[in-house]
Amino acid sequence: MTVARSAARRPGNRIRLTCQLVRPIATIGRMGQAVAAAVAFRTTFDALHAPVYFAPETQQRLAAAGLKPESMTYFASRAAAMGQVGAGTVTAAFYSFNPGLVAHFVPRVWTIATPETVLEARLAAVDEIYRRLFGEELLASSEVAEAAALAREATEGCRPEGRPLYAAHADLEWPEQPHLALWHAITLLREHRGDGYVAALTTNGLPGLEALVTHSATSNGTPPDAAKRTRGWSDEEWDAAAARLAVDGILDADGALTERGLELRERVESATNTAAQGPWRHLGEEKTARLEELCAPLSRQVIEAGAIPSAAFRA
Figure (cartoon, rainbow, N blue to C red):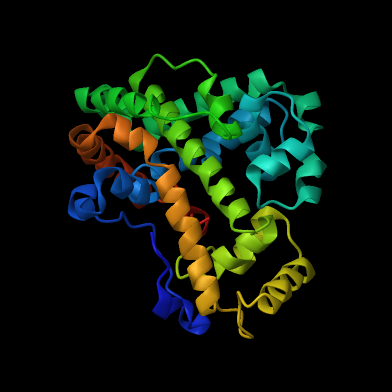
């Protein structure tokens, strides 16, 4: 997705997305099927993964394991696939979180619940979330089974090199039930893309906080207050990063992206999409279109149910 230049120059009139699905992949096929799928991933497929971070079922399952809600459960549930890693590893892999916030919970979280316990609780929560959102009949349908098979086939085109979160999740056993296999496949595709995004940010010289500040300045960025709250940055730290970006000519005096800043974010998005093409090239044009056709209604159902906060969805 390219950055909308006209909106980015008007910080007081910033466009706010409302978790709507993007155009079907078939309608943007002129970009090339693999690129189109990579661009559309966030809203076409990622909505099937993201509810696990916000649903009450997740908080309840992980609370039963002794974890505190919100940040502790997020860090534990997403990092557990890597094992009992320390704060440095989690900070590096997650990229845009304040190291102090991460260190407050990691590695202490592993003294409360083992990674194996966390992963088991997370998958049980996904099962409950999907049953609530979709119902038993839909989950038992041939369409969900087909989507799971296609999504799993797409993951065969993922490469693990330089992708720690993807590689860790790829080492996990596949769930047997189709709806859980679908969620696991989407998770693999998501982490594969996310690791590529981190590589694009580092290549373009954007450290974690600066990456977050510039993303918030784009037309579809997470609002600064939400970004600071969820990732543990203070107003002073945020303002200091913005000042550094202004000195570098990335932001203007109002905190909006300059021409140079817009081009920087576009390079990051382009590199991310390019690096995410592998699964879709492997799956092929016809099967990719079919997977989008199967998943789009499910994603729409998740969004319409309010299972993903709009600000978080833009993160």
